[in-house]
Image 1 (cartoon, rainbow, N blue to C red):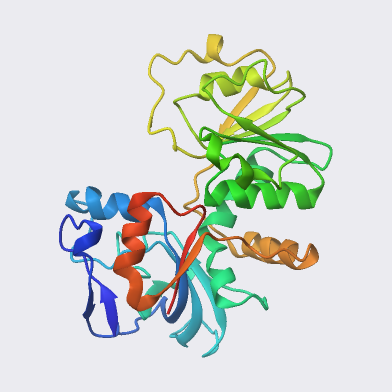
Image 2 (tube, rainbow, N blue to C red; image 1 turned 135 degrees about the vertical axis):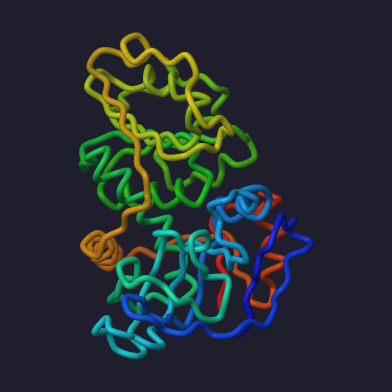
Length: 315
């Protein structure tokens, strides 16, 4: 089969497809024929720096998610040809991931799905929608009557969160730090240019999904109403930790701070996501589609940051 194999730091212009053996099935694992997959910032991080870390099993095929069909069910009890999605659990780091025509994956991170979505749209769902879903419902406990602030909304996760919240019936305030991207937030009720300070500029917000992260998190905490909940899920701001953070002083009285970590997907959550998509007749958004043989070009697009939304590869 063809795949991208990493042995060390690999800029986009050095990414290439090579021939490798189709993985051999073993108990507890299933072989998936990859039909499509979404690309993620974490795969860029892997190629450009994390690949040097001692915990990365090299050589490795990157890719933390995919959609496809069961090629060999091993001892899972599933059927050949069954439609599945897979994500996280060490994909593309602890074991080979989805930048390949076949992927051998642990059964506990592969999930059968009932959906009529085409492969390209389906590929936009697993990691992005699971993260948005967990952030909005598990962490923010979002309800139709809520006003949701999405800080850093012009990304794949932001677009998914807007789709979910609007389908639920929420009022949505979405932000971007680039004026040229304000038109991309047309599905939100209000689009705001983020200059680093939203406190006093947004009103009535009782739920906030912060995708910018620690860079402006303190401001997000003071931008919501008393009784509001803030979920920090992203790190688009390029700051990964909060230094000199005083929870007593920096979290306003009556405001709640939480965060979502997407490493623990479950079948019941994936079922809920696909039921929601079907019930509300939603088509997952993505930014651009490439064919599998165009993966090196797609990596260049990922590194450039010029694609608005998810990059999807169809195999």
